[in-house]
Length: 114
Image 1: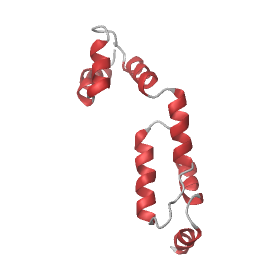
Image 2: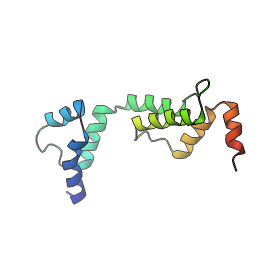
Image 3: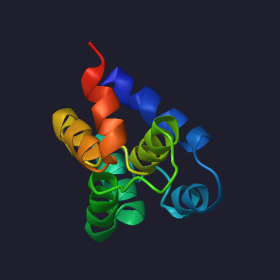
């Protein structure tokens, strides 16, 4: 086992609370001896494929609400991404999806910026 993996394995439990912390405590002692195995088990438990797919759709089709400023819609967009950091959507596609969901007046103001 690599030194970095050992550190990750030891520190991971300190990043958890509530249900995920209970889940990890209920696993056999020393069950997770490799970081990638722990990651896969955690993601399968808390981010099943259906949930990731739904979050990905929400991220790429976030409509701007009536009267919402660019700052407000951008913050909602970032919040959605933080709910699923491993969404797998490429950066250029995220920006394109965000831009496409803006109303015409905001698109025009963005297009004017040099």
